[in-house]
Length: 274
Image 1 (tube, one colour):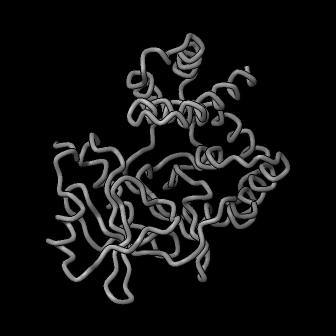
Image 2 (cartoon, one colour):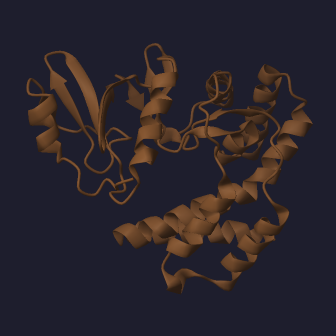
């Protein structure tokens, strides 16, 4: 399948498909990456999204669109348009905060997502870890990274506690606090996987909050709290490796030094856990 690199520009999409819309000056609104923007026609606003990686295969972006078509408006923006490399989705009016919601609200949001019908494609972590190793800058391939990757390859991924649709990029910037409740944006990494993988990906700084969030979710999902917590801990090294590898590849793609700083922070956390 073709990549997204030679698709329409934003101006071309607007003139061809949204002639009555105009660009709105982008607010400090998370999820507007790459060439994404907010467009408006009267009172109606849409988010016009482009995949953040131009070299990505078309089917990755199409899966993002299909995920949104299957999710309720109580979780995600409804898609209203798709063409190769671009989609338009509803705009959520609300606040994007710099911190995660309280543990009970966050657990309820994720439980609501995990109750939805599965998407039909799996989130597999190990192939991503291997791809990040291959795609990163050769100078960044440390012996520690290789040893940790080999250890996880030998362990294999934890057996799922419960398979459900996952967002896989839940952080404060991807949660919109609307008048009707919390909503999630930026679903490009969505797929089916273990609920504990998602919970392990959302890590609060405060240890007590982490356990409260896990226990609240366990109560909602009728899972033994200790069993869920242990499964979250099994997934945590995998999540840290995902984060580090993603930052390494984003630095390789963009040259932005902030990604190296973030990657180094994750490597330090992994070394502390040895």
